[in-house]
Structures are given as structure tokens and as C-alpha cells.
Length: 156
Image 1 (spheres, rainbow, N blue to C red):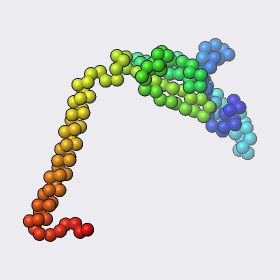
Image 2 (tube, helix red, strand yellow):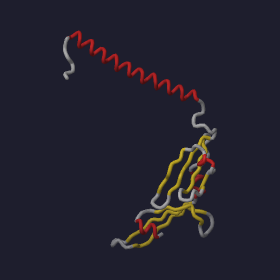
Image 3 (cartoon, rainbow, N blue to C red):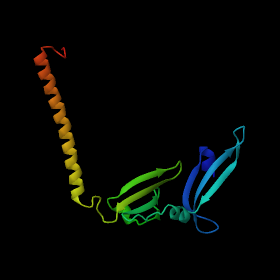
Image 4 (cartoon, helix red, strand yellow):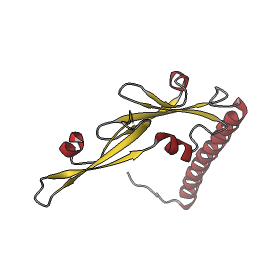
């Protein structure tokens, strides 16, 4: 509670063990009187099981997900192996707490096969080559027009 009062903003912690049993993610928001003095703190307890069930955490058929607290690497959901693999990891921060969310393909390969990548790469090369070819041809046609008309389009 004191962290919320000191920071003047919402403070999120957890998951923590609750006195009444189970675990919860606690959000605390300070409330101040009109003169700026402390009035108190409003707390909201979020059930992590309900939270993750509501977002279908780890139900994706193609990816493993894991979620942990950054400070002590306490695993909240998923498997610790996801963080040890070549995972995509992002941080989620709050003023007093931060977490990490990791994702890794279930088939252990970010690219399922080289063909789609090769195809996209070749299409990119064709597009870039076409653009360069157009630029070169346009430049040549401007030079030809200039030579034919006998005027200078650009002065140095």
C-alpha cells in the first residue's frame, strides 16, 4: 500500500499468496483528499486462473506461451523451457513490477519450411529489380528526350 501512496499511481503486484488462500494479482490505487493528503488506497484482487482462462492462455495450436515475473523469474503460467528456447520474449512493466511473456513454436521451428521464405524472398527481389529497371529506363528516356529536343532539363 505504501508504494501506491508514495508513487501516486496504480501499483500492480503479484501473483502473491492471499491470506484467505489461493493466489492473486493485486492492483492498488491511491486516493487523496482535496488538500493532497492521503485518504487511503483502493485494492483490486484479480484471480490469475480466471484471467488466463479468459484469454485462452497457451491454447494456440502453433505456439507455446509462458508468463513469468521478471524480478525472481517466478513462473506464473506455461513451461520454463519456453524461456530457455529461442523464444520471442517481451516485457510488460508497471511502476513496481514487471513480467515477461515468451512464445515459441510448438514444432520448434520459426519457419515451417524454407519454401514460403524462399518464395517471398524471390518475389521481393523481382519487385526491387522491376523498380530499379523502371528508374533506369526512365532516366535513359529523359536523356534521349533531352538529346532529341536539344534542351537541358537540369542545370548544374
